[in-house]
Amino acid sequence: MGQMKSIHIIVATGEWDQDQLRYRRHRLAEYLQNHPETKEVIWLCPTPNQKGKHNKRLSNGIYEWTIQDLFPQKVFRFGRYIDAFHKIKLQPLLLYLKKAKERYTINLWYTFPGFPTLSNLFSWNKVVYDCSDLWTSPINGKNSILSNFRKNIISSAEERIINRADVIFCTSEYLRTRIIEKLGAEEKVFTFENGVEFDRFANYPTQMDHILPDHFDGTVLGFIGGIKPKLDFDLIQEVAQKKREWLFLFVGPDGTNDHPKFKNLLTERNVLWTGSVAPSEVPKYMNLIDIGIMPYKSSQYNQAVFPLKLFEFLAAGKSVIGMHLPSTKKYAEQSVYALLDTNDSSQFISACEHLESIKNHENYILRRKTLAKTKNWNEVFEDMFQLV
View (cartoon, rainbow, N blue to C red):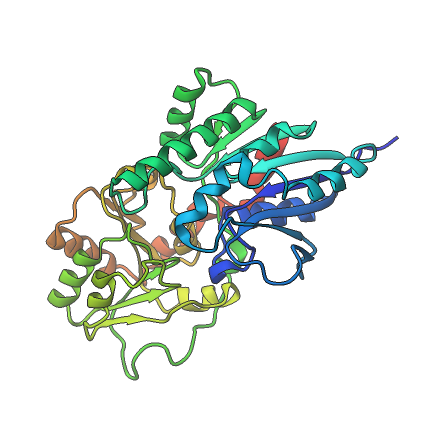
């Protein structure tokens, strides 16, 4: 008798197509979906507004199953961490899984600490926690009565998941250390940094048309991804004012809720923002950029982050400059990746001027690609899967 096929439930932060960005959890879901031993992948997620049926098959074959929030307003999202608000709504899914239990192995993958009660409502074959964020720390770093209330709720939900999980993966050593502290043990906790769909970025010759101003042939510094308050808009504005000959390109949805500092940055004549773009187009935008920028602020939240973009820029042969990202320190290398621990604009400029001077240097382009190639998502997930 062969191996029993598996059903994988992935607890995700939002609907598959939410804000058009692709995170680690999307790639994990696709990896599992394409695995020969997989029967089905279910993407289980909260939704502020239920539109239509609460379960549907996506075009990639993954089965999306939504659980409606208490109310659509953002302030009520804490219900995702409190059993009473979703226990009943999870019943149809549990019924569905009970029927499948005799024929399949059924694994639960948490990619954020939502619906903690799920880990106890069913006899799972394996419970996995893939932790990619400091969930208890507000992105904007501000503390308030409300954020402390949220922090405590999320913290206790996460603690339950950590204690129940058979194996825990973290995207940075910082997160791993933190989870080991909570757990009081390290046997089941592993670090697996984010990877890259190498071929999508490395072998992509075409550029996006009609984005850069006509006749512009200067240096383009680019950021690709969700634009959030964790970025240092003041710094970029200062640099843009000092270096008018450089163009700053931001590609991705505005996740700042119309932050005045982001709006202000966009008033600079050498700053361009495209808005949200289709994931399939990202490599074309990548090819417009000379230097990838990851201008993060110094915060507890950012200490834990391992940015998805680092290896994507490198796979495309681009040099990168990062700020306040201790998790990436070991990849800092002359002419490949510059890491700063300051928000001093003149240091930022001189690091970029060095990268600008070697932007078309074949040896460095090759070195960047070689580094990124060791980080292919498929191999990252293969290694994780072995531990499950």
